[in-house]
Image 1 (spheres, rainbow, N blue to C red):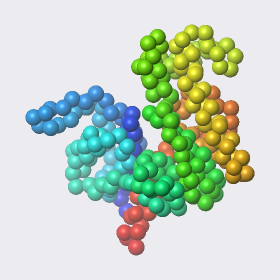
Image 2: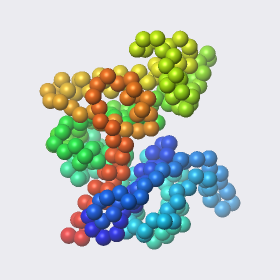
Image 3: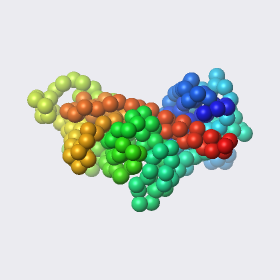
Amino acid sequence: MSGAPFLLIDAGNSRIKWALVDAHGTRTHAGAFEHGTRTTDDAADITRSADEPDWSPLPTPGSAWISNVAGDAVARRIEALLNARWPSLPRTTIRAVAQQCGVKNGYTAPSALGSDRWAGLIGAHAAFPGEPLLIATFGTATTLEALRADGTFIGGLIAPGWSLMMRSLGDHTAQLPTLDATSARDLLASGTRHGPTFATDTRSSLSAGCALAQAGLIERMWRDLTETWQVPVRLVIGGGAADEVTAALKIPHTRHDSLVLSGLALIAAEDSGAQSA
């Protein structure tokens, strides 16, 4: 990697994470901000939010590299933020491709794989070279990716995330409460369960049941993958609900919360190197 730093932006369904990496690939600045409550001035077609990143101290990057799975409105917001600070900054919104940065995409239609999952695979392969991996990310959705030691992504799974599971139960059953993540975390921490699983009130039952459902999925797929490949598989986990799920896990795992940003840095470096060659 050479030249000006890269600005990396990971726009997920709940929040947006960003980082600036220098010419040597070292992270010099980082932050996150929520999508927030937005109001629109229809006459001016302007979207406003109280939660904005403070990019004023940053040196001018050479380019911005973006993974966005949160839709068009978030894309417009990121564009507006970049234009307000660096109006002429070159920017690239990545898409999954058949092969990149040592990772081969096993999806039937490679471009259909989410950009966050693709960047995360690239970041994981670089972080744990030569190891077979199961990558579990706990966000709005829970995603699983199986990655061979040689960088071949063989496929994945998508399930409702911990918070989404709880919200769905509250929304679609007459006698169950709708729990938000904050109150559910407090319930898990309060230790009102008897034995490894069973709770003695409805709210605790909901919170623990959904966390254990997540953990059970991960453990099942990790065991299946280890048995199929006949080699040790490293379980790599991250995401906003990772703490709640890992508290229920009974298998070894490694925490890594920056796989997407790490993958974006590698994509940016490879592309810039190809252009300068």
